[in-house]
Length: 276
Image 1 (cartoon, rainbow, N blue to C red):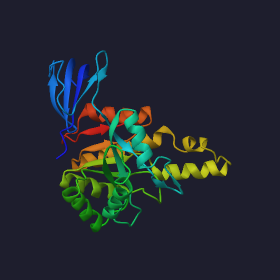
Image 2 (cartoon, helix red, strand yellow; image 1 turned 90 degrees about the vertical axis):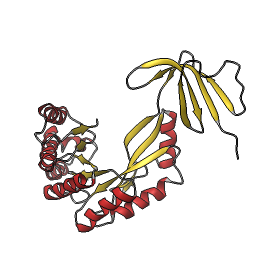
Image 3 (cartoon, helix red, strand yellow; image 1 turned 90 degrees about the horizontal axis):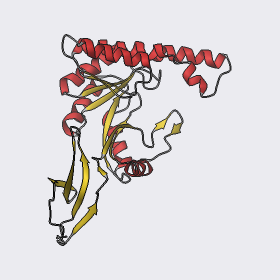
């Protein structure tokens, strides 16, 4: 049996969510075992013990990035970072876990998408990771696969797109069904909240004007398309009393919709979360 790996981080200011304190941190086999002042005598030279002097430094928990897209194939392109380069960079910046997205094409199996992303990630990741799974279409099969993923694969969040018409976008009745299933299986529902129909019309206008550069992306999606979809998603989630997480809020008006909903409070108690 290999000797136990032990690490003592000595004398740093340990920062937690509620307060900070100057303390030692004892780690054994990658698990924090003790936290407090003067955990081991200064002269301790136990076999396998490595000591880091953190005096005058902050000792922070590893960060968790809850929204990444590593080596994601998207509309004829692919994310530049694969699971190796992306997680290597994450660790360099103090992020020790990512949550990526397994996104099936319309008509495809959610479980197969989950396995595909696992096969991409497992040989390459440098840090801890987990997956959200996207719901890009609806059927009884999708409903059952959501249940299987939550029960057997540890998936507890599902993302629905209100944008990307013809690719990932789902309609209101499909949102209602997906939110209802999330509520039933105890999962968090996520939405990319933009009005895909209005964006598609805006894109046509940009192309008709000869605007084909990246500036057209902003011009075809004014703030109103996000604010409207955000309110619609909250309304649908409230109808089924499903917890809702609105991802990458990009505009002040959409943020106001979320803030107003949280302040007002749904009579059924539906919580609304948000990420920027």
